[in-house]
Image 1 (spheres, rainbow, N blue to C red):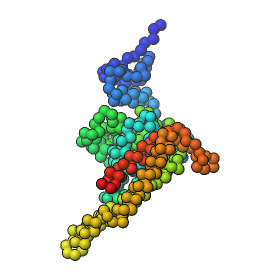
Image 2 (cartoon, rainbow, N blue to C red):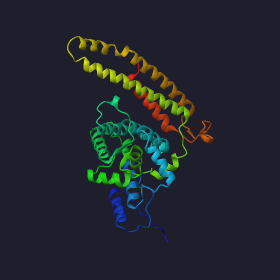
Image 3 (cartoon, rainbow, N blue to C red):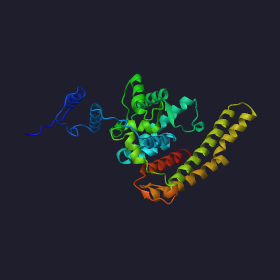
Image 4 (cartoon, rainbow, N blue to C red):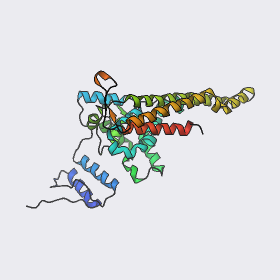
Length: 332
């Protein structure tokens, strides 16, 4: 007897196929891949919709060890959560790294700043998670930004665009699907796993990431960049203070204006430049020695472990963050 194949060649046929699945009618066979006539984004949407219609669960149950590991990642600053995700899924999501760094991470930080009533970036220290209401605020700002932005409308970044939905539906989605560890918050890793659920899920992430440790050289580079952040915060705090004082009339105002004009030749500025040079050297060494490799600690937690697998996410992030800091604060 000849095997019958259910072909999905256009939008109408695809909708009928999905409707059949949702209504419980069995199909003899559905192609693993949608028609080649569809765009890349349409194919991704089809695969995601079919998986959800068939009941494929995004949140797979984690065992005790897996949940403990997941919680340890979710307790790290937003940027480190993003790096862990990129390391685990670089092959699938490396093309979205710039979006994650420039858009998602940025909006996550500003949502956290909004929640904590912080108005200046130099006064902000990265958080680890957002309450549901702030998670809704994050999605609202992200969707509005993408709607108004031309730069991120390229089809290349389609998989990074969140699905539009009402606030009520979004909150239910956050509670039922995004909040993997059921703590009433949304972490960066939970957002990323949910956004890229076409190929990522918590259980798979734990499997991929659990045996991955941060190499000492990569850690050294990351900490060097954190020192740069400290120098930037001190520089920006002084700049803000002098800017406010310069508005005062009289001698005090004139003195503040003079100090402000000399700020880029001050010890604060020189300290920042020194920190940038140190960080650049550390990032260069980490990139040269360990770019493209992962690391697992030796016995008893020693640093004699061997490089295994890949570490592109961490290396990419270090270089991207260094470039951003040099652009804003490097010598002109």
